[in-house]
Length: 213
Length: 209
Figure: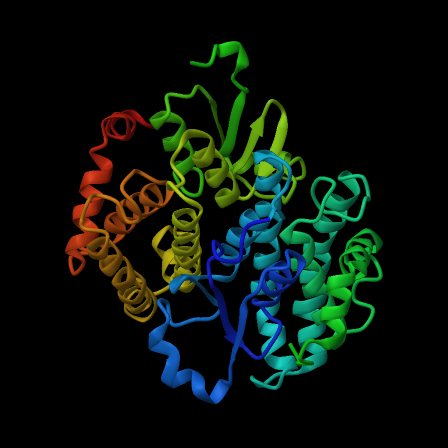
């Protein structure tokens, strides 16, 4: 183990939400790495925005050096802590699935803004026309990937990678808006079950701040 | 020196276009690595679609094993051949800017679709509404990045990376639609000049389909 003196100081800046920051929080927890979980209240954000490179969160500070963009952060930490596949090809597949998950999130956004009351719209219509087709399209692919990987509780390879955590968290969030949305994807649900059964994660899920997203 | 029999067989499949495959093609050329540059006609896409993992191209085959998603492919090849930055931190900055670039592409899409003829619309109006403000924001970041990096011909670090190639290729595309599109970003343009004058890249750009 690396001496605490040699370790960089880590600070994860995000909102008080799970969202795009949660995967990185869980990587810190899984690796037993201390970090500052800096949750910025929404009303303070406008004043703080210009401190951060792209004006968006999350931003990870590594000894004060900023890394923006949620997947760049997750990938950086996954590499540092060993949650990035067993070889270069596995790592590339982890990245491919993560990018696909991000595409899924983009397609869901018009539904989310209506469902959360941030935009005008018929929730049921948005669910039928936006959410359900997006879930079917992307989770058919994720289900197949998990099956092709041997239905072993991972999307890629034989050990936990950051994309297992990423997709598990999206499942949790969406299921809270639309229960049962993933019943048709049992192998995906098995990945989530495996992630959440890890004692450190189970404990974190129980004690973490309870947020809507 | 790797014997040719040890090298994997690479096959990159995409349309007859630069698009999301060009960076990967350039990486093969820059590293002197043989690969099959498999270009399929758009009319035949229906035949191939269901054979790809995510129903999209590009896909990269490495000794027959398939990898989807353009950035995962580019990053994989870049790492294999040394174009992904010199440290985990540099790689992370490259990834962050590449993802920011992807976001920018999404924001300019209404303009882009009309510019490439994929949909109908008012070119000038969409340019003013979508292309220019998003260009100013994203290329504002890149202008600062190039300057902070010492105007050394790279956006991150001191060696050629897949992010350099990504941006240089995009600038070419946008200048074709809107001459002078990036005239307000001299550090970016200077960096692009140095990138495209990399010998093996210059050669490919001159002879590519």
